[in-house]
Length: 135
Image (tube, rainbow, N blue to C red; front, side):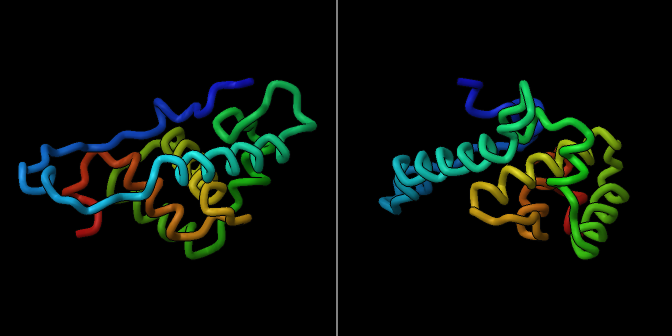
């Protein structure tokens, strides 16, 4: 079985320390078992999508032909990507990686197409300069 995710170089996030009060809260997050089931479902979607392509098992492994097919975005998404590229000074390589991550986020949500919500989340994972994004 291929590795679970190939996103290690595609996600860049800033983690800030939490104050003790936040750590001590009794608020429960989403259970790991629920998240695990969503990941398994997304992996099945990807395995089915790429079953006819030798050596391709997940979104991170897409070639350019598959990328154009499965990471096709509508006008709203194109405008969002242009704004992110301009504001964050992202490269063409970052553009491809963001769209692959957005494709995975869409799969996790069970959505067939990438939408602006998926794309915004992927941009945030790629953004190292969060202070300049969203201003």
